[in-house]
Every structure is written in C-alpha cells, then in structure tokens.
Amino acid sequence: MSQRAESADTVLAPAGAVIFCRVIDNFGDAGVTWRLSKRLRDLGLPVTLVIDAVDVLARLVHDLDPAATDALVRGIRIVDWDAFEAEVSAGDLSRIGGVWPSLVFETFGCRLPDAVEAGLCDGRTRLWVNLDYLSAEEWVEGSHMVWGLHPTLPVKKLWFFPGFTDRTGGLLIEDGLDEARRAFDAAAWRRAHGARDGLRTLFFFAYPVNAIDRLAAGLRAADEPLNLMLAPGEASDMLERALKGDARFNVVRLPFVPQEEFDDILRAVDGAVIRGEDSFVRAQLAGTPLLWATYPTEDKAHEIKLDAWLARFREAWPADAAVPFETYEAASRHWVDGTLEPAEVKAWLDQLPVQKRAAEVWRESLLRRGDLARRILELVPRA
Image: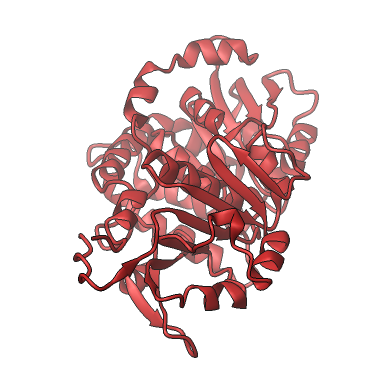
C-alpha cells in the first residue's frame, strides 16, 4: 500500500524518524525500538531514539555509555527522554535539526509529551505512528491501520500493529537475514562457547516467575544429557541451582551479548525456552523450536496471547507428524500457567525434530509477508 502523493501546496516534513520509548518490559521494549532504529537507518533515514532507560539499552548496545544523555551510536542518535523533553518544552529542537521529521513513533502506547504533540502541529505533513505490542489475537487485525484524531489538536495518529497475518503489519525483518543464516556455522559456535559434542543444546531465557523448578524436574526426569546455554539473569540463576550437581547437564552461562549476536545463539541451538517479544520473534525467524514465556500480567492476558499464537502456529504443524500438535500445545500452556509436568518436558524434548519442521514452515510464512519497516515507509507522505 503506497501513500498518495501530496498536493503541490503541501509542506512536507524533512525525511527522518524520531522514536519514543518508555521501557516497561526491560530488554523487550528497548530491543524492539533499537531494532526498529537500525532498520530505518538501513533504509536511509536519519534516526533519533528517545528512551527513558538508556542504561537498559546499553546492555544491548555495548558501545553505548549507560550514563549518556545524548550519544551517536552506529549512525543513530540516542537521547535521554527527560533531557529531550525539557529541551522540546523550551522550544529547542536542535537535536533533531530544528524540525520534526517525516516519521514520529510513539511505541507501545508510551504517550508523547504535550510539547511534542503540540510541535507536530507545525503545518508540515508527516506520519505519526503508535507502534503497538505484538499479538496474534484476532482483534489486532481490526485495530491495525486505524486512524485516531487528537482530542484537542489538529493532528491524527495511526495505530500500527505487528503481527503474523496479512491483515497486520508483519515483523521487523532485515535485509540479508537468509544469507546470514545460511553462512552461520552452528557447530563452530557451540564448540567456541563450551558445548559438548554429541549432546543436544537448549537455550534458556525466561522470567523468574516462570515454573523453573517444574522445568528443572522435567529435565531431570527426561534423563537426557544436554547442553544448557543460560542467558544472564535471575531466572537462569534459579535453573542452575535447581540442576546443580547433576552431571548429565553441561550448564554454560552466556554473557549478555549485543543484539546483533543474539541471533547466533538461536541459530546454534536445538531448542529454546524464550521470553518476551523481540527474543520470541527472533527465535521464529531463526526457525528454532521454542517454549514461549509471555510477559506475565495479573489479568492473565499473557495466557490469552500464548493461546492466540498457538492457534496460528498450529497451521504449520506437519500433517504427517507422529506427535500431535496437542502435545506441544499442552507443554506450552502449562509452562506459562505454572502447571508444567515432568512428562510434558520429556514430550517437548522428544518432539523437537517435529517442531523444527513446523518452525521452518512457519518461518517461511513470516518472511513472505515482508518487513514491517518497509510497510511503514510506504505510508510516509512524499511528493
């Protein structure tokens, strides 16, 4: 879908993007907005990322000073939210070249500062987008590409939803993804990171509230020696303690890697216990079998999100599979709701080859739908 050319008397905002992010789900929110920033940069736009947790972003971007209030990293300007809001409120737009650019994002409903919203009413034509959270729920299709009017200002905002169907915005997919995957040497990566030859390898990245003791009990009961690559964090500390002393498990504590290296982990393993949004998407784009830990909420919305994705993923399950989809479905649901049984962990491990076949089919369907960033750029007003 292309944006119709504007009339001759329309004043277009200069090409560029400002992305606003308030971090709620730590690395997920920061990870998505950093990935979006890089994607738009690679597509030719000057990009400014305004974020309220530069220190969190610095865990993913190792050449970023966590105490910085203004930094230029890999061609992207990263600005502290409070410092930037104070400047904009004082009428100072020097950090973005004096004019709001052609594309302004608020991410995950973060709500732009009043001075920013007022500044968008400068007589120039641009696209203001609320990029929302990823979900496979059916209601997303009806909410995607919906315009909303500001209650007091003469400006409108577009609600744009990532997703897994043709009636959503798709996923962030960089150029060269397939080539990088084909060129990757998984065996060499595993050897370099302490994995033992001859064992299957799992990656673990979850929340401390997940049923980690139950997962550990299931791994023990499965009676299969494994390489377990654990991400940094409290959840991994808990799993390591729960498996301590069991020589069947080669436990490797991975460092916190830059975002660009995270895909290597997912490409190198036989399965992943994964959390959040960005990591979840990257596992799918790597074609990696997974158990997904959705971001936990008190209203159980995370269980609804999981069920919605499972309903979509079911379509990729091989019709000739000896293991029914319901086996995977049960393990996924019970991992998230805290009732995971040891037998379900073993069943998940046993069906990893089947899930790998499904993951490859699913991955191809995601790639065919194209890149979210390109879809948004098609909507930006231009001459």
